[in-house]
Image 1 (cartoon, rainbow, N blue to C red):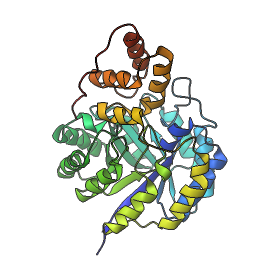
Image 2 (image 1 turned 90 degrees about the vertical axis):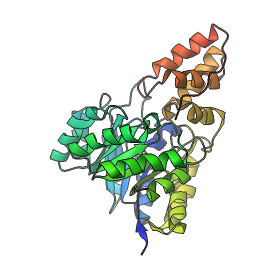
Image 3 (image 1 turned 60 degrees about the horizontal axis):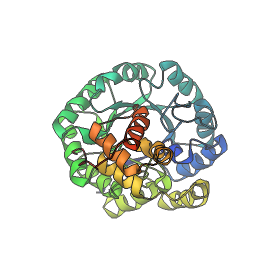
Image 4 (image 1 turned 180 degrees about the vertical axis):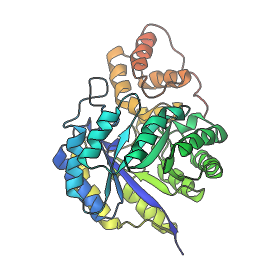
Length: 343
């Protein structure tokens, strides 16, 4: 009897980061329709940073989050539409707008040491009847046991799924497996894994996470996502099937959607270039990818030096202003590349 795994697609949220949040509602509808045809049960839709993030700080989107949600809801027959909620960026009022537009699932994302920040939105969303998935972002920054303690808090608030999230693409398979295994011992909720591919092992990390107890795995068509991108949805489907798992999705409609709808919309291929690789090596949040490249050009310093210093300082999501601070400091002094932060 084959093992069950649920693939969640995040092309229309994490993938937004790679297209400067410029997908149109029609693009969203076309991609969501293809994912639904392939049998993907949950499709995440929103600005790349989540609900309420369209701004000068994070980049303006081509449409509003409710517009994106409605476009996806109208395009699918079976899939649930989800949205990402980051406390401090989104508000409950914006989450209510997404509910009114048709989401059935919310994914509440908190830094891995700050699970308590998720209590209000998790409990409120459960009261509204939503399925609640929770993200422990930058999970590489905590060892397995303290990460599991944070997961237990989210479990106690009522989360249906708690995700180990490799936001920096800094993990290798052992790191993913150890963290998921620790969560499996600590919580009763389902466990998810969200991979970025900065070290080229996103698919391997996802497989290892599943072998250690994760039952929800995120992917993105063509790997579209922040920095080096995510584990590739269509590759995940094929790899899990070859490994003996039942994904419940149809591979060839996934491939068709990736090849004929997503690929033509991409600005450039999703690859592990120098900046993406160093970002994962230094353990820096994936959405720092484009701002770091811009700062490197503006201040005339290597992007790798900026990233290594950001990693040494332990920056997290929400501290994007540090990119400019570090770049300007490096431009004014001789700099020697430090060792990366520990994983």
